[in-house]
Length: 277
Image 1 (cartoon, rainbow, N blue to C red):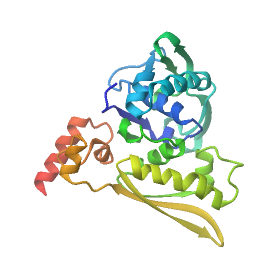
Image 2 (image 1 turned 120 degrees about the vertical axis):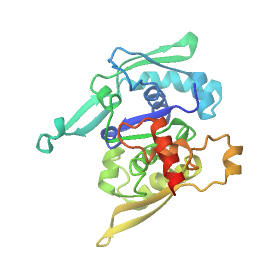
Image 3 (image 1 turned 90 degrees about the vertical axis):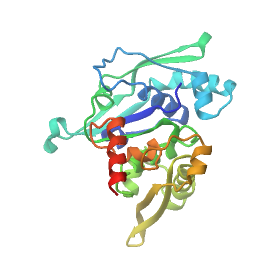
Image 4 (image 1 turned 45 degrees about the vertical axis):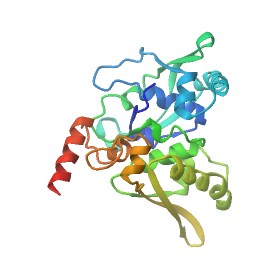
């Protein structure tokens, strides 16, 4: 599987409420990265992920990759997602839709491979996106071992051009489906927030800091400030990272993409802007 695969999601999916394990996240993201966005896609298209792909991409051993893939195949069909959206852009008609990620999933034992079809409801949020979407390299989250870290990275990447995002604890718990858990902020901080931030800082191209905000005496909001990590050209070359004309990786550059813009158009525009500067 190519290492430069791009994940493109509607922001409705980024801000949806769902719970997936790390391996389930990896499978879904690998399949999303295979979606062709320049042609008509139906819910009959099969997307395939091999244990060897996961082992190479995520740095896990083959035996564990085979086991994880088989176990994930059993659970993925039951995984649901709640999406809040406005049909035809009409706020008064806002809907909260409960649906499934996939309509069916097969595990091919002899090949250590999983095949799935995305649900009909999900596909419009993955294809034909011309506005309100988030794009990043799959490799940015591939080494993360926390499902919360992957979600946090996506929530921050959605605001990549801003560099700051404030999230209420209530909203975060809903997005991560933590309702009923971690009623004490100290537990949420220790078990979810701090480990997630640590992994985003370690494995992704973002450098993240955060602080808590109170309403009265109670912590009610988290404020994340973030931006691309500063790397030297020598370090980037040693990491075999393709640099853009602006000196950024593709993941860092994606934050500046305009709706409907191709990678070639984005690189050309940043190169021109850099020359003008």
